Image (tube, rainbow, N blue to C red; front, top):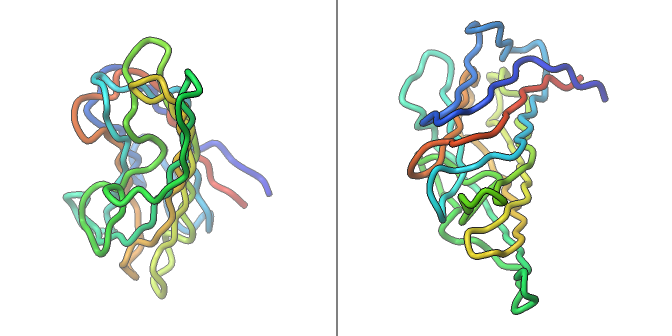
Length: 184
């Protein structure tokens, strides 16, 4: 497997970061059948926020494609006071059009808190099948907990996907880097 870096975006108080085919040297077409976004130290401007994504089908706008997903979360408290592995019902969608929770849930904004992880989107240019995705991220939660979020699902469109947007549910992306890769 070869990963080719396509574009790097660095946040500095941005409300969202987006990658769209044909803009700023972004290739988001059938050049690759798999795309990955690597998130490095994504940091919210406010406490207890979720880092999310949504896409546009080719020619569409509004970042509101239908998503069906399953999300699991595990954590361990910094003071060894608790741990769990459970379904994250509030982060799942069933034909929802909201932004989908990806790598971070209940993220903290203290200077020592951030999230890092990977989102993989399979065959976004295919016009026969729906588009599958998986994401996995490690997060420093606002109340000093180490968390790990797993999300998988599909975007229920057979249209090509050529835009993706990342944002927090509230507030800005204070700091962080997102790298887009094509995988061959």
